Image 1 (cartoon, rainbow, N blue to C red):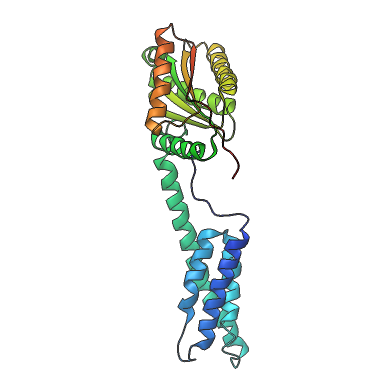
Image 2: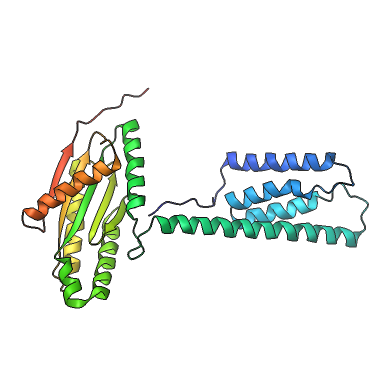
Length: 283
C-alpha cells in the first residue's frame, strides 16, 4: 500500500492536450528548419515525456507517428529511402522509449523499497509518517477525523526463543497478511520494527474505529489459535478530531495507549478521542 509514481493507464485530457501541443510545436520547428539541418532531436523531449507519463504502447505509437511526420519535408525521396528513413527514426525513438521506461521503473522500485518493510511487505516507518502527515493535512482542510492504532504482539519473544527466528519471521508475515485482510483498501498497515505495527484509518470516527480494531484483534487471535502460537495483542487506538502537531505525535499518542493496554494485563485494546469535532461550513 505504499504509494509510488505510476504510469497512467488512462491519460487525462490535460495530459493528452499537453502531449499533442508539444508534438505540434516540434513538427512546426521541424518544418521551419532548413533542409540541410537535421532536427530529429526536436522530438526527443516529446518522446521521453510520453514514455515517462503513459504506457509503452502510447509512446511507441507516438514514435511511429513522429517517424512518419519526419518525411513531410522530404517528399522527393525514393520509396526505399523513405522506408529506410522511417525505420531508422522509429528505431532511435523506440530505443529512447525503452530507456525511459526502464529508468522510470527503476526509480519507482527504489521508491517502493525505501518505504517498504522487507520482511512483511508492509509500509515502513518512513511511509507511515508520510501517510499520517498527508491525512492530517487533509483533516485540517476538511475537518475529517483520523484514527491511528498501535499494535504490539504480546510474548512474541517466546516464539523466537522456542522455535527460532525463521519461525518468528513467518509469524510476523502471517500477522501482516491478516492485518491487511482485516482492513480497508484505503487504510495503511505499517510495521515500525520488531513486533510492533501501526494502522492508519483515514476519515474514521471513534465508533467505527472500535469496530475495525475489534475485528483486527479477533482475526489475529484466531490466527494464533489455529497455529497454536502463544501470542496475543495489545492495541491502543486514538481518534483525532483535531489534528495533532505532527505525525510523530499521533503515533506516540497511540503508542502510549497500547502501553497502557499492555500494563493492564495484555491482550486488550484501549481507545481515546482527542479534540472536538470541527464542522466545516461550505464556502
